[in-house]
Image 1 (tube, rainbow, N blue to C red):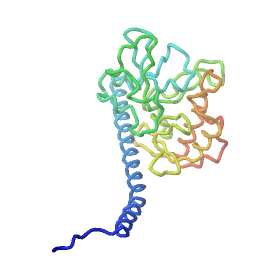
Image 2: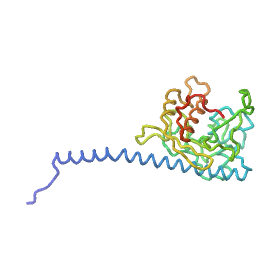
Image 3: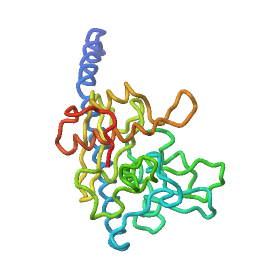
Image 4: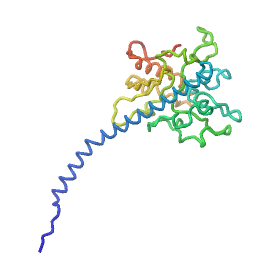
Amino acid sequence: MRRKTAFTLIELLVVIGIIGILMSIFLPTLAKVRQQALNANCASNLRQIVISCTTYAADQRGFLPMRFREKVQVYDQPFWSYLVQDKKPSPPVRYGLGLLYERKYVRAEQLFYCPGGRAHPDFNYDSFPKPWLSDLAATSPNYRTSYSYNPHYALERPGDPTSNKITAYAKLNKFPRNKALLLDLLSGPQRISHFSGGERTPSWNLAFSDGHVTLVRSKIVFDQMKLRGDLTDDAKGSDPNWKLMDDYRDLLETQADGQDPRARPPTNRGKH
């Protein structure tokens, strides 16, 4: 009569222990690889958008797509750099990245959204009615992307703080090499697209007018966000604190340019 063989309890516990050890070793590595892939996919999105902006500018005497409500309303909210259409007219008027999509310079609207999983829900592709850029009723939320487009403005009359604000770099060939044409969502410390996979320091992708994309890891921006607050939330229920975006963006641009952002104070930096 053959004797039945089986694992002893000790053998099973040893196997389970080995599996646990292997998982503790490989899972962080897999999470890191996944985050690196998301970072790369995001950079690819931005490069394709920059190419589309370049093509658009070539067809429009060098001018980039007009930013939200340019020449219709004073540009006083960096938040508007995320908006792609004005829902007030019918049919709606498209701006910025929405103009690229409407004129078919970009055919896949998903390119306008970072594939990172921690973006703000109000800047998420799945948050908006489909087909994308539908003609919405006035009460519907306005479409926005998770990439800030051309987030730079200037006073129409330099030195006059009461002057209207306009796009600082309306033409592609006037865009400074160290200023971002596009960058990842700047919101707050809890809503960062590139901050997972066991990373201790969050990062943001910045795309420049010559087509290169730089991933900037920035503890100083993260610390400033924790100290000074979320741009898109306001505990008092008044206007969100979007004026902080200029400082956060400028800190990232400084790092992307290979400079130390601590060389000057991190506040009131967004000057053009």
